[in-house]
Length: 238
Image 1 (tube, rainbow, N blue to C red):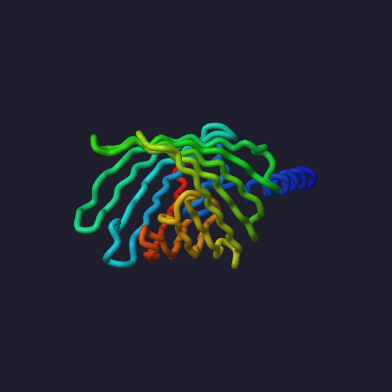
Image 2 (image 1 turned 120 degrees about the vertical axis):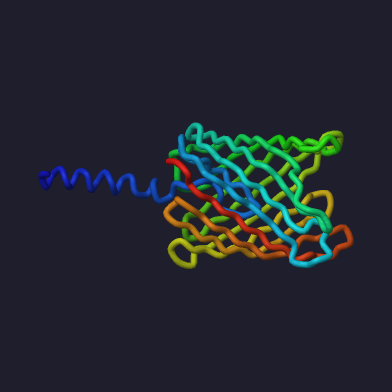
């Protein structure tokens, strides 16, 4: 290989490196939805779980395994399931939810504000359960050193009225592949269900990510119940 050809290949690699380094799966936070979508053909396994840290909580734990697939540079498809364990009961399968995520800003632009929208329809697994529709408008800005995200959330349970809420998060890199941050979410109509957590985020070259969080959720009485969250992202293909 001639020296000129080597120089050209090195230049091409340097030109591609920023986009490769900044390419990600759109799962930067624990309770927020990120606007970015995976590259077309990339497939990710997601495993999100939460657990109450005190024995008196009505819901002791919940789990949401999912598959996330990049369809186009702007669109991804997700299919996840929901299971939960209530106090005094065994684990129960609750719902299946297909979802579509659309990146509204330029997918070739890796800097500046990114905006996306996601919609899911949760199908209840039991006859006495209710289907639920949720739409999220998501925003994210920053880089690998410091980034923030925000969601505007609209949801409607079958037979009920629409409810609106929001979520916000920020994370800062401590070293390569490790960041610390904080996240919160709340309804605009009621205080119950509001959640605030501190998070630790581990990543390895976009092939896997591990997210851990500890915080609290407010109940109807105003009591803040301590909770823990875990999120795992594994790239299966791409």
